Length: 203
Image: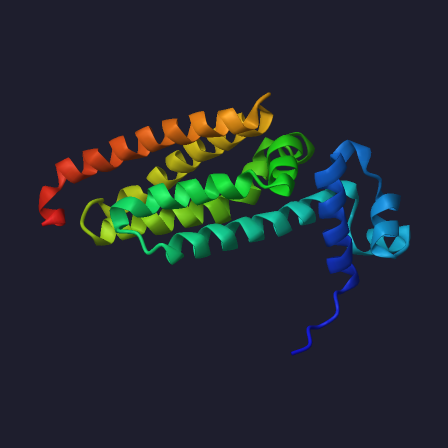
């Protein structure tokens, strides 16, 4: 089965993603991305307003892969609703620790895009995945549906702060163990609390 050839935009985004991940935003020029994609600098500006716009597109491609990985790997384990947020959170940390996600989304993203655009970029994916898990808890009678949107934002905040801590740590591997352990404590405490508040939902 043949696949459609990549468009110029796809080629530019793929090479930008690779170069930004390897060298960081500041060290990569538009000319380098164009050359790596086998295109001219003019082709870059035909597709993108500027280097920041190209970086944003590369970040969006990374986020799409993060969402796909977290969704598929979490569902593959078919956890109970009480465990879904724990499994999904672990998979989210796995995805953010990939080299391109770490560099583009966590190290360069906040400063290049600005805080609001950076949050806006991640919200549909990360909060959507968390809200999906929270929705299952609501369906099981463990949460009131009206708290799911706000609660999903709060849990997203905890996860993204953990991912940032890992990304900037002098020893990311050690920080990952610490953050994952702390997150597990936090989420298990939350789950124990809702289980106690609505015990009949578990019967």
